[in-house]
Image 1 (cartoon, rainbow, N blue to C red):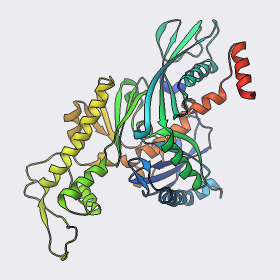
Image 2 (cartoon, rainbow, N blue to C red; image 1 turned 135 degrees about the vertical axis):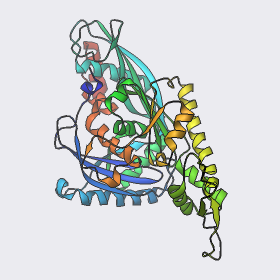
Image 3 (cartoon, rainbow, N blue to C red; image 1 turned 90 degrees about the vertical axis):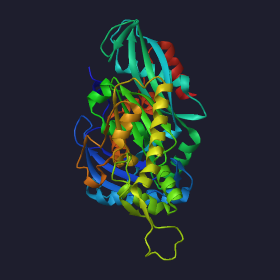
Image 4 (tube, rainbow, N blue to C red; image 1 turned 90 degrees about the horizontal axis):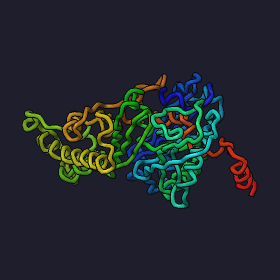
Length: 425
């Protein structure tokens, strides 16, 4: 049975909204659920260059709030007909990989020989959540990965099966509390409520992977401006997430320093002429590099393209080497032979070839899938996380810790007494 059978969907005709808060851009997508399987039609789009955010962390609340307001307002105006004049109130937001941590927890419950139900699964997940609750961090995802019934392994979905004891292995993702509180404060100042949160790399994976990739094993590398985030999928679930605190902005900064140009010019040069791998003609191709502080702007300053690529390639190799090391150190480097690159910094020419060389895996570039009416302007790798946030919100409510706690019904008499006591006192 596929992992999709275990999903929990938003009702048809629900409106869902995602706010992707990144170091390079802030993007908002508003969608409408169009079927009983969580299919989403995009009705509103907005995006702006980021202000007040660096390395995935808010460093200026006022600047970030202003950009969020503008972005949301643009998406609301486009979605006005679908929203029937009501302002946007609830959004799902992303948690940058730099703030997220993976944990594996096991929980077992007694089922006393009866058919295992949805509530039994939720009881086990709730029990596991109690083990990791802490005042220092927030629980973001509760993802059941493996089940055992009376010691028997390999069970994908225990519902309807019979046994005495059920054990669940769970991938839990937590986030540092302080950055999350700053993010929530910024959202509230924009007169919005946070409906849910999702780790950026998980959202990107939900957006760019097909079911077979998730099932057989695949690593998603979401290359953002300030952070490169990692998510490993197997058996239809995310089984690990991590990050490298380096991204596309660091490449731009290297170019600006070495070429002595502004960061704006460095970004433009990187986009127009950059490549992850050099070629034989690069030495002969000259690029005009505007110099900082030059008096006569009409006198061109030329550098060979090979010099530019000589700056870009080592930094990208460094990022990919760090990713490979993270995967090896955590025992997940051998999960599948496929890697999908996504995110704005993944659009560098020849980056898939470089990644194949460094990671020794088959590498492809991932773009958002599974959304209807997605405009071309937001259909590239840079918007994979934004699209995936909508998919998570519409299809994965069963992995949200608050939803699990709210919907669980205690099993035994003693558990019901403890639950009543917790609820009333």
